[in-house]
Amino acid sequence: MKVIIVGGGIGGLATALSLHEEGIECDVYERSGSIRELGVGINTLPHAIRELADLGLLDELDRVGIRTRELTYQNRFGQTVWREPRGLDAGYDYPQFSIHRGRLQGVLHEAVAARIGDARIHTAHELVDFEEVDEKVTATFQFRDGDGGQVEVEGDVLIAADGIHSLARSRFYPREGPPSWNGIMLWRGAVEREPFLDGRSMIIAGGMAAKFVLYPISNEAEDEGHQLINWAVAVKLGDGTSPPPRREDWNRTGNLDELLGHVSGLFSLDVLDPVELIESTHEFFEYPMCDRDPLPRWTFGRVTLLGDAAHPMYPVGSNGASQAILDARALAEKLATVPSAWEALQHYEVERLAATTDIVKQNRGGGPERVIDVIEARCPDGFDRIEDVASHAELEAIVRGYSQLAGFDQDQVNT
Image 1 (cartoon, rainbow, N blue to C red):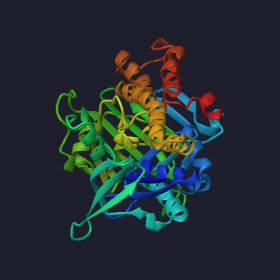
Image 2 (image 1 turned 120 degrees about the vertical axis):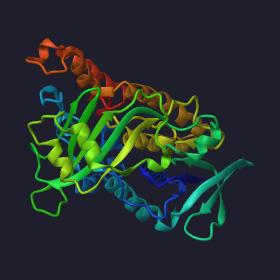
Image 3 (image 1 turned 180 degrees about the vertical axis):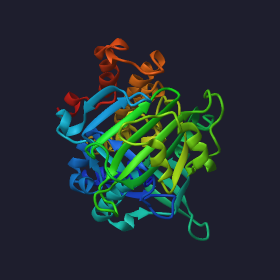
């Protein structure tokens, strides 16, 4: 069997490693001229780390990331709403990692190049067409670093891991239109500085109108004793009825004065000053918080969707990259164990579509971050005792309910 993977991001590279582990031949085709370590911080949850550990990547993840010890939800005044241990400190058999998205992609890229060969990773190849003929699928790629020529590639299966703007998805659903924007704008950056708390903690503060997210993502810093600290600000700018900014405006460099207008005087945290942290960041980026409506199906013949091409979701609950990794492992297992490739893709869809659909819907409501939304709605000016605002059982139901829904409850992971 030969598999064509479209997209050299986290989902596509995790798929290549998983297929190789099962003894299945594959090639990766990426539209960018190189696989670069871009982006800022993300979290990968224990259920995804379990899969990466099975692929032999745990030591490399330790080299470039941080094992998250604790997550604290706070209101904008720095008052604790909910605190819980994470990963190994919470009794999981596998850690949670806070990590630079680009470094995680780099770890996967290096492993793919070493195991299947760098020659099987084809950069500057943009998918422009595909068709299924005689139990094969033929993909047409256009070269992006030369004269614009094309090449046709034949395989038994095509996996479209080509992101929220997936060409394959647009062919299956030509009337879908652009991604949906909920009116929230994200600014994200990372800067080297001294650790806060124990150097392994994550804080999410604020509420429905604005949130501030903070966590370390690497101990690799130019100055001894410093860490690379990731921060993010999410601000509600609209009601979600307007279209998202043009695609060309995604991931653009953020404007400091504009961002500080949303942050100054709003957050008061004990661990550090958000304004000072943002001002010390050399460059940061702006993104609209977008997703797409869940689909009724991903698989059409010998072609299927994976990761953000299948289920792009709002970046709450630390599930985007984690779910792409779970997709990859499930898909490889089905292709290795189900006799028919077509049936294997159907089995993959049955296992993964419903689960990710529920997460997309939960994330639209705030996911586990609803614990601070609830508190802000009830006491926007702070509280004396959290117990007078919401019971422990109510808050626990929000956080634990989400972990069970998303498949990373402790019992689900450890068994």
